[in-house]
Amino acid sequence: MRVLGSITNRIFLASALLAMLSIAAAVYFVSAQLTAQTEAELQRDLTEAATLVSEQRHTQFDNVARTARLIADLPKFKAALDTADLPTLIPIAADYRSQAGADLLMVTGGRGEQLVLIGETAARPMVPISDDPAQDAKATPAFWLHPSGVLEVVSVPVPLGPEVLGVLTIGTLLDDRRAAQFKSLSGADIAFAIGGVVRASTLGPESRVELGSLLSSPSPSRIVIAGEEYVAVTQPLGPGHSITDPAAIIMRSRSERLRTLGAIQATLGGIALGATLLAIVVSYAVARTISRPLASIADHMRQIAVTGDLTKKIPTKGQAGWDDDDAHTLASTFNMLTDSIVRFQRDAAQRERLSSLGRLSTVIAHEVRNPLMIIKGALRTLARDAATAADVRDAAKDIDEEIERLNSLVTDVLDVARPIRFDPAPTDINAVCRAAVQAAGAGHTHGPIALDLAPALSDVHTDGERLRTVLVNLVTNAQNAIDGRPNPRVVVITQQLADRRVAITVRDNGNGIAEDDLPRIFDPYFTTRRAGTGLGLAIAKNIIDAMGGSIGVTTRQGVGTDFRIELSDAPARAEG
Image 1: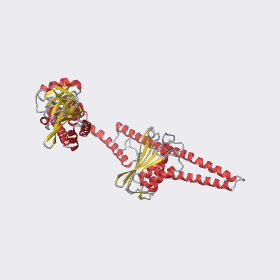
Image 2 (image 1 turned 30 degrees about the vertical axis):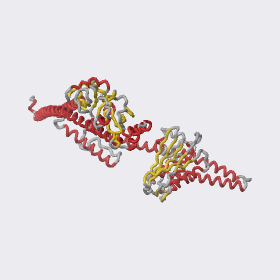
Image 3 (image 1 turned 60 degrees about the vertical axis):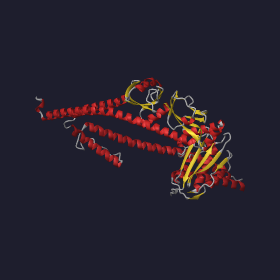
């Protein structure tokens, strides 16, 4: 049997050979181009990083020089320097150094004597300072030795008319921290050297000796550190170009680029091999036998996604014009998945209903039982033959109070379950806070309630009565939180955030809210108090959200809790 005797074999072999030759040629060309482009890009990135570091350093120096001139011209600084009173001059200089963010601030008197030195005292100039302060007071960079880097300083005169009171010197330390900042900006590793020694580097202290060899090497050059190859360029920081002059070394990892290139080449090889195998295996009529059943399954999936009807099943046998075992398995598995999702949704909904019913039942059982027992006791009093008129009045009063309590419970449950109706109007927030504190404080002895109200607080268009209800609830909760605490205190604070936007904070020094309970405090029926219903905070959040505001909480265990409400003049979302 001839291999080429069949047209199928001829098409198969020709297609496979053409695919292999085309893929091999493409992979070789792309790999060569990527290698050349990677090397060129590495050099380009190194140049760009060196330029960026130089520009950033010059910008930093210009800012320091400008700051030094501004400080030198300040009357307060001049007056302190003129008096040469160190107790006056030192705090002023320290404050200016802090504001300038400088690592070194030095003040020299008119005769060259050093008056103030704050900051990197371990630094020393490369060249001794002259006795003439005006000679050193030039706004050009100078570089000082420092054990952990290079101190770049600028000195400016402090003039007073035609005289020079002294010299102000401000310095910035080019150390490991500064090198890391430059690295985050440029993406390149940075080292700083002075006196022929590398004193700071992003590659760590152990690399400094090896990096020192770059100071005498032509740029760009290559170096291997800890098994990693770098391409480096040495950039002078000052006008000098000798090995002892200050310099910055900018490095890009060549090994990292080669690893990336190797990964790309390996991926290309894998793709080439996969494409070749795919061309061999799938070159003849396989795509059609796969695409038809998959297209039919995908169409049914799309219909399910559009309609959301998980009960719609994918036909698995002989109904779509195909009968493929793999497609049949896929369709059956998808049908099983939809059945599982439907069952899970049904079970989850049932569990949620049972959970809600259980929580509500607990609340109703607890809150309804006590009023019913009191009403029952009152009815027994009425049923006695010897009941007096006073007994009847007391029993009627008890029944009325407990009915009111039951009605309040029903109202709370309905407030959580249904939209709340509002009556917005211009509202004096401070007045609402006073009324809420008065209402919450009546009959309570947990501790004092203080008011810290912002004066001239603007009115807000909101429902004042609903807001008072929320504040009464929050203040009552705060009073319960401080019960038994030493020096208990609750404070209601108001603030003006912006034009017609205010904040109200209810602060207590109680035990705080447990970390596990914090995400659930606004959930209906959640409470940590034996006598609580778990509806107060849920209702408060419903009210504030519906009025277009926000309510949040911050707490610290053993320190206290802040509930903060923010309201603006936006119209309330009143709903019926």
